Length: 221
Image (cartoon, rainbow, N blue to C red; front, side):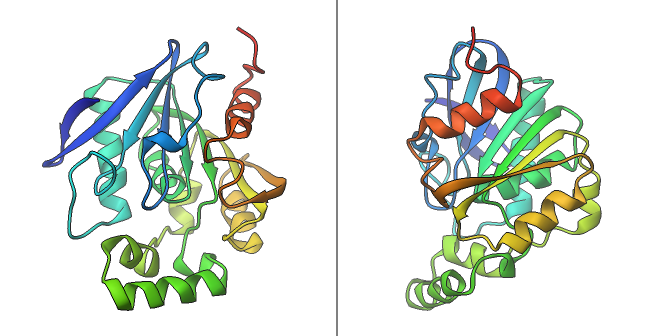
């Protein structure tokens, strides 16, 4: 993996394919290996990043979404990327929303299964997170309990073409997905039928198909 020092830590990432820049951000407790990129590689240079505290990037005792978004903004700046398509899943979607509200270098944003507030998660999942955090004090679960806190004004600052997605049987409340999409000018919303929070993203070509459709590539070289 390639290393890049940003904001006092080391991010590790892979690049696959050739074409316009596409950043892929994984969810909580995961790493870049969740993404299937073969359909994307003829169209994009896919930057698959392990977020701070995850995978082979620097491990930390404390994590915050805004700091993780700052890492991605610095990554984009350091690599001098422009017209970026950013696709984030779950925590990666939260990071994507925060990053896109602060730069015009992200021209297309796909946020999958993202929430703007902790209560955007369905109640049973929130309860499980609280129990696991009580037992483990894991910074990963503290992150989901205490954050994010994305304000409507921040969502309204996003200028990227935006697609907000969720599974039909997601861990995100439908009202939360609707609200995020409603705050972003021109945003589209996609509820993936017969899908869970993870099933259309993790090791699935379905997400690649969604990206190709949204960006106008449509699977053709």
